[in-house]
Image (cartoon, rainbow, N blue to C red):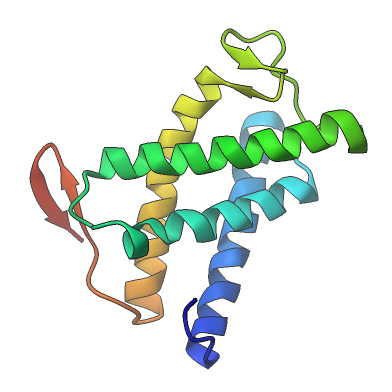
Length: 150
């Protein structure tokens, strides 16, 4: 695990806050409401998605990073969805009427949407890390075989 110095603590607070508020905002924009637990999931997912470049080479195409991120979000959605469905009974979402769903808590359509959300999260996290916190290398992305940086 990374050395938890003051800079890393600030980094994780900023990333957790960004993930929490971004998820709640996106969900409110598209659904009109959200749940605090979904913000917590967004915060955790944001940290995990941010770690993709730390654990996996930046030379992996951005779309593959987005697919990995989608897997992270879908897995979190599965765990939280099953917890909600069988223990909490809040009723945060129900995909039962959607094609290719599992137990009404995850579905293929949203897993595909999570690819785009993950790419957004990767770009935002990299911006925060490099440009705001001055942490790490300048971000770059492989898109259609070409290297891009901002």
